[in-house]
Each structure stands twice: as structure tokens, then as C-alpha cells.
Image (spheres, rainbow, N blue to C red):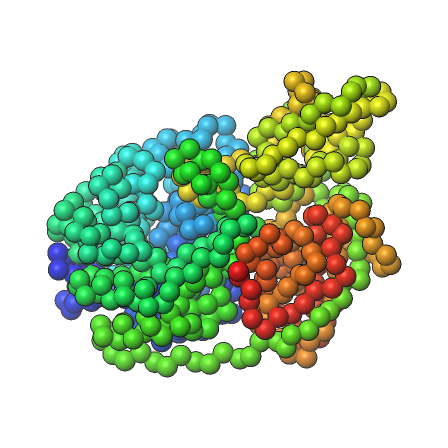
Length: 590
């Protein structure tokens, strides 16, 4: 079993420097895990690290999923087969630029919690304990103490960035031990005094997360925890992107020099990310410009390429070769050569001739309509993610007055008597309310609200979706119906597709086309001329697209495709979209 000492780690009596790389099983298809894991070995790593997202595995209270991309047991077996140890981070909260930081959306609908997350609240801990009863035996079976490959398990994630409830951390640590975890437990936090004094737990290993200034970071860790080995649990070698912002990259030489500094200090390291993968479906989270207040909503893009050394489709980058050169000086043996990837599909254009208006098929896509005096939230509707169509009546006649929407999360198309009058966005810098007049006795007001990812870090964790109120001048409008439209977590139903000209007015429309292939392979899907929406390939939701960028292509893994005809469906929200889509040979991430 792994033993932390002040000078490093010892495994079964022999020194072991952890050369780890982060790869999240839930961001890559299971068919691709073996190749990605072998690429970690080829870079010179001996360990893989992964988070465990609670919300993926328990989509509804007491209903668990450990299949497909959620097959944690299969991933740990695949890692062992690739010759890798594993570090598992199953904290209830993971951040990870993942929807709600990994916390299930349905916690926000539990009236007993009232937002008390990540603290020693009995109602919250009851949910955590039930979840750990199901999860932890899966992890425990793979520990090195039982002949497996799991070296270490995390207690909570960057808790010093959030709070100081040591009782909560003690409860989590005790729960891990009671359920069979006997390998070392650890915390990970930023290398500053307030992080390390708030987020660590006496008697358990403390590690630090950073992207540069390794010498200073380890000195601060040593000041607080002189008996712990030096380990960077997250060496940020790249970064993630938000919609509407610039694509982030880090020069390979600069990142490699910091990696060299970490290893020259005698420390262990976990490269975050070694392979980033993809935020498929609606799993991308969001940040805020000010984590302390939660102001300035910043939704994360679909790609989680992260400018990592192994790119989104598993190919080595310039950073891979720079890291491999550094790691080779500290590895026990020369790394294997990386295996070549098969070519991507040839670039081509294909048509999407079938179409249907979203509002014409709401009864097929929705779980039913709900009536309420005020707009119910997504959580009250039982809606994890997707769209909700809110409707009410504005009495009249009345002169034009501003219509204001409060608590919008996150984007709304606004219609008056079926005509679009505005598109509103949460925290938009240039928010301008539409002027609405009612000529007759009343008018129908509709808002199609889209969720764009719950905040995963900072004060805005526990981010509810929908809207809280709509005012016409100073008057609150009441008497609402809400129609939820789930997206991302299940295939679309069979729809009454038709062909012919598509209406040119703005508004949500579904388009469908067929992509014939001789042999499946990886590709990148581009949607020139489209605005914003979602894409499904053979029933699998790839994720969101938005012409705002920076990401302008979606990665399509080869295992989603098949020889013969492949169905591609696009839900375009801004409408009407284009008549075609394109396959590209290279990604365009900005």
C-alpha cells in the first residue's frame, strides 16, 4: 500500500514518484479509453487521475447509472490493463468545469436543504451517505491493498476555496474509511494560507494545485504541512474556454519548464489535463467573472480539449512531446512509442432537408404542462437541463411599457402573440428590455428559456434555472403555464418530419439529415450559417454549438458512427439555420 513520507511516496517498501495525468472517463467514450490510457503511458506517466461526478451516476434520487460513459469499474480495469495506477477523486463536489460542479440538480429541489451544500447539514449528508453507500464499494474493490491499482482517494475538492467546515471534511473522511477505503486520503487546494488552513484535514495528506511558480507553492505547502510529501495534484498545463471569449492556449515550452521545476523539486505531479475530452450533451458547467459574488455568468463550451498534451481525439500535440522529454528523465523505464491514430473522415458537405418547428412538437418532446401563479424553476419542474416554455396573458388594452425579466437563467426568446420581440441573456452587458403594447383585451406572452450549465465554482454554486418573475412596467405578471423540454439526457422521440421550404422567420426549428459512410471514423462537425443549438448523431447528443465561438466545430467520435446511413439532427434555437452541415478534417476551437 502507498505510504506518504516527508521525502516522497513509498509503495510496498519501494520509492514511487507519482507521474500522473488527469483523464475523465465521463468525457471520453468507453471504446476510446484503452487508446487514451496507452497515450498516457506513452507520454511517460505511471498513473491516471479521475474525478467521479455524482450527478452523472445518480440522475434521480436513488436511481443509479454505472454503464457506458459512467462505467467507473470498467475504466479502472482499463487503466490497470494499460499499466497505470489510479488516483480517484470521488468528493461529492468536483468543480471540473462540469455541470453544477458534479452536485445533482435535484439537491436544489430539496426544500430541507435551502442551499446548504458542502457543509455538515444533516439533510445534505443523508444524500451524500446514500450515494457513498453505492459508490465507494466500487472504488474500494480496486485499491492496491486489494490487489488493484487505486493508490489514493480524495476527501473533498478545493474545499479551502469554499469554506471552513472541518466537521464536514471529517464526516466525508470517516465515511470513506467506514465503507472500505484504506489507502491514503488527501485534500487538494491552492497554495496559499487561506486555502490550506480552510481546506485541509489533520491526519490526512494535503496536496496543492497550481499552474506556475512551483517552488513558491511547495514552500507554502511545506510551511503548513512539513511532514507531507510534495505533490501538485493539479498542474494546470492548459485551460478551458467560455462561450464568447477567446480560446485559451499555453505555450508548450512554458508548460514543460514548469513541469521540469515540479519534478526537479523532488515532487510528484498530476498533469491537469493530460487528456481533456468533451463535455457531451448538457454536461458543460459555467463560471462567473467574480467567484466571490457570483456575478458575471460565463458558460463553458462543449469541447474540453483544455490545450492538453493529448488532444480531444487522442492525438499527441507539441506539448505531448515536450512533456515526454521532461518525464523521461524521471521515469523508471523508457515510455512506449505512441500508436498512430487512423485518419479522420474526408471533408464533405451533407444536406439536412427534413425539418419541423419546435413549437409544433412540444407535446412529443415534453413531459407535460404545469400551471402555477409564478414561473416554476427548472428544478420545480423536475427538469435537469434543456428548455422550458413559459406562457401567460398580459391584460389590455395598454400602451407600450418595458417588459423586464428577473432571475433569468440563462437565455430566453420572448414572443408576443407568437411574434419574437427579443432575445434576452443572463448578465448581458447591454440588456435592453422590449417595449410591449397590448392592442386588444389581452395578449399571449411566451418565453422559451434555455439552461446553459449550472455554475461549478464559487458563490453561485447551487445555480437554479428558469426565471423568477416577469414585470410589465412595475406590474408582476401572474397565471403561468410551463412546458419542460428535456435535452441531453435521452434520445429524441420520433418526430413528424417534413420536407420543402423552411419558414425564414426566427424561431426554434429541428433539422434532420442523413450522412452516408463507407466506414466510420473520427470527424469534426461544422455548422456554417447556423446560430445556436444542439446536435444529435445517431441519437447521441454531442453538445451545444454557438456561432459566438470560440469553438466552431464539434468533435464527433468514430464509435458514434456506423457504416451506412447516419442520422444527424440539429435543434437550431435562433432559426431558421442552414440547409447543410460540413465535416472538417481539423477542429476549429478558436
